[in-house]
Image (cartoon, rainbow, N blue to C red; front, side, top):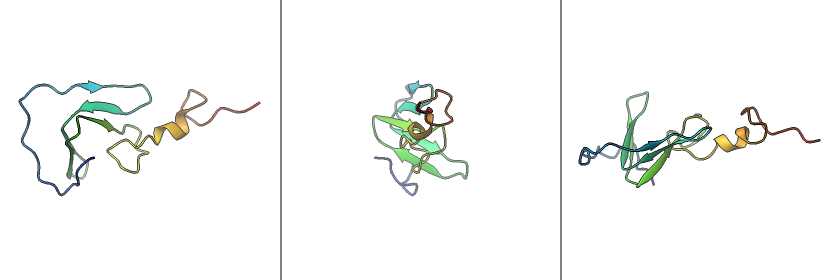
Length: 86
């Protein structure tokens, strides 16, 4: 589970590069642990082995993905909403 923004920053790991998996119409999957600096300068961190970072900004837990992107992008294939029935 991601840690709260008030947790102290953790020292960097061994210096090995992080693996980030880019998915079309989905979150960025990042091998953890990670620290994310937000636009306002606050830092949030997670010690999980993999985290999903929101790219659509619909998540109520931003910057962590809560799969909110699924609600609008399934169906039509253009991300505008569900497909018309008929």
